[in-house]
Image 1 (cartoon, rainbow, N blue to C red):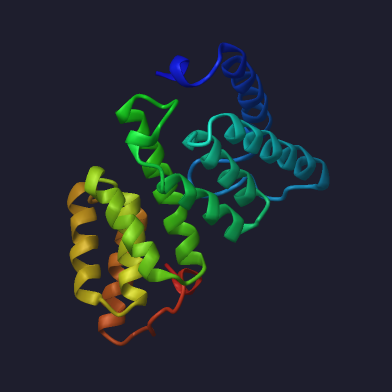
Image 2: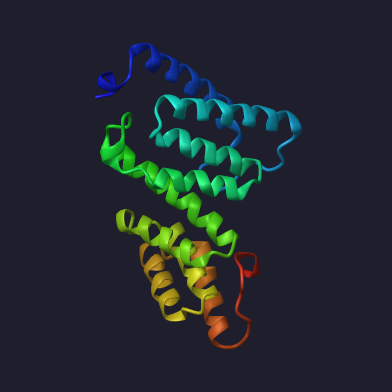
Length: 210
């Protein structure tokens, strides 16, 4: 299908630019929501150059979700959360039928879930818990046993005073992995909250596990 839309010259140019940008920024970001920590001025220059190149890739293939996700991760590593969220959400707006490059539906679903995961975490950090819950629930539609997402969802329910939903969610997570440390801590936290031992958190940073 890509041959019908793009010339071989543009395809080759796209791959050259995308691979170069990807090789440059990939060592400095992680998939699971975080960066490698402090990003100095030299790394910032490299990451911003990758952003520019990935945007050039989108000029060639406008619906390339990998490029959108990469831009989101670059901005995330720079600590620019709102810009990061914007690009993850741009990826979420692309339907499988619109793709001109990622023809494999299974890979498309994986990319969408990556965007959902990152967007849900940033939304929670920005206290947009309705959005965070929505994105987490969308992930669980295709990954019902994702215990990390279940734990995140339970914390969002606790913050928004939906303790019954929080309990159901964390019990579900522990039924999948009974020994998971973080989800056991969330379950204990919920019990202490119910008993009046601790006050309700207003943000993720308010969760203190001991």
